[in-house]
Image (cartoon, rainbow over all chains, first blue to last red; front, side, top):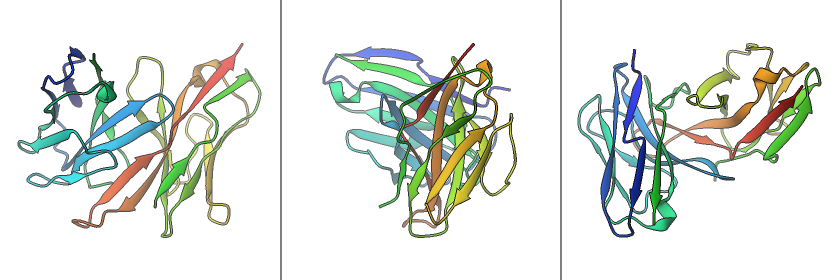
Length: 113
Length: 113
């Protein structure tokens, strides 16, 4: 019963490097989300995908791209990492778009030097 | 703009004391509000939603539209209640007819023996 699985759990990058955070869910949910969690700022929505084939910007999309590869998978890409992107990233999914109950992954801690 | 405000970063109480975690929201429509909780080393998970008007683990939250608040309360705190608590608001997206979920900055509750 995996739920939402994120990889990697930890990553250290140098400024300018690129990387992709992977997320997969096995609950047959339609909607998937990427949030970042920063001290004192809570969780901020980066991008979301209401359903397969659609994506939309959240509160803080700059510097990120996403791909909804299929119903199960939703990846987040940093093309040119910056120190300001040091954060903990959470993937989440829900059955209906914004129905309220989101199921979260364990988080991915990213450090950009 | 839609916003969720949790004014306290840290709330520290003794076991058995009453607890109130504050949440105020800014939204012109009819709000859907939730409380999420993150225990140490666990995933973020839904605690309760205002629509269901339920009590979970002794916690309740009442929506006050006049004061635009959704405070989380528990009459007698337990040590196992120590966690990070996030208030969240659902509102319709402009694009696609789906809903977005945004979070407050979170309040850390520390219950001391």
